[in-house]
Image (cartoon, rainbow, N blue to C red; front, top):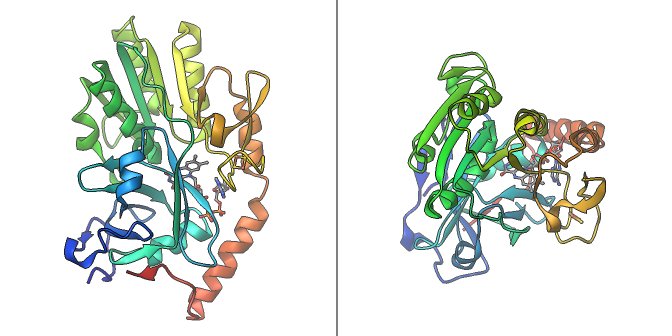
Length: 313
Ligand SMILES: Cc1cc2nc3c(=O)[nH]c(=O)nc-3n(C[C@H](O)[C@H](O)[C@H](O)COP(=O)(O)OP(=O)(O)OC[C@H]3O[C@@H](n4cnc5c(N)ncnc54)[C@H](O)[C@@H]3O)c2cc1C
Ligand code: FES
């Protein structure tokens, strides 16, 4: 059950009796949804994680015994069902391998978390929540928390084109106003999310905060858009992480001229203080090794060798 191939847009679930509901040591994938050729959602049952998760936090996932550790944001959590949701973009070896092997009915080898400092859902009365591409998923819990906290929420989400749009309805549900943008104009406002922010700023002179999540270049552009108006701008940083507990120093980022560890001091930071150029340089450090890892993995797949997979539940 649940191990069928997962064509785009098709949602696969497994029934509850198939799951070890009381087993806190397994991380069973109970639902998968494919949003595009590269973006997929995994819902994982784990009562304790679901109970503990807060907006802005992430987990570190290891798919199989020989797998590497990768940080993924908790894009949603359901305390009643006891599940957390991850939305993943297949960009390199591990995320491509997960795309192939993580199906309902399999389980992840390890999930550690929730990690990171939860987002501060303060007393801002009017908030613009901005998600660019995959960033729509991690900003969603923050938009929901702001709305539940009584704020007026303006949602701005942006994609390269219409085919890549996901979670539009889910996001809209918690927004008082909603703006969708696309680079090619195939849906909503033509342009990047900064066009959406500018539209919101023109209409509203009393915005207290902008929360922006997406690729570093996008978050940098958002921070520059709000800087002249001095609107508090919070971003979520994604440097390379290893342990996620402040031990290895791999996730160093420069914020306000100081070195901070994104895994424990963040991942949320003041966007006007972040040195985005340093972050982008650091993210490119292992480009050659990452390319070789994908090539090696692809060769293994082509040769039909049994690559390690997520375990059957
Ligand atoms: C706090 C945090 C939350 C994140 N949340 C999500 C999410 O919700 N969904 C999602 O798809 N991605 C998320 N990422 C990025 C994700 O961790 C990387 O895409 C993933 O590790 C890539 O691994 P790979 O082997 O597939 O690709 P690789 O080829 O190894 O790397 C591809 C790119 O991913 C980045 N990367 C590689 N290894 C790491 C690492 N250990 N930590 C961080 N970045 C890395 C690098 O920029 C690299 O260029 C998050 C990163 C951080 C730090
Ligand atoms: S990931 Fe090691 S210190 Fe942050």
